[in-house]
Length: 103
Image 1 (tube, rainbow, N blue to C red):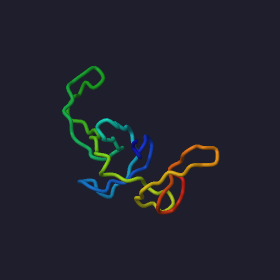
Image 2: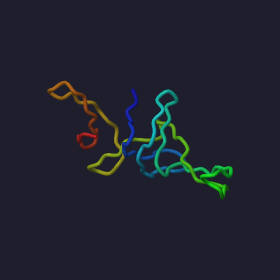
Image 3: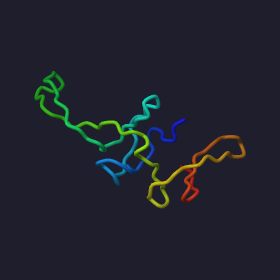
């Protein structure tokens, strides 16, 4: 089970974008990689098409390994680990280890 899901706010803790925060766009649990908005940008050559008649180079996000990010604590605005709390109705929620808030 991965601890990071789509639309979570995460902090990059290793690599060239260390310290930056962003929203998770896509998660690939089999490869343990995630795509984060405006993080790990690379330039890609784009062929001329009808949608893009100019062609040229475009900037796109490249995947980041899941071990290089941590969840962002909304209360303290810092990276945090998470825990799982079982509510009275039997549902499970993720909580921040630093502040105890529900993520």
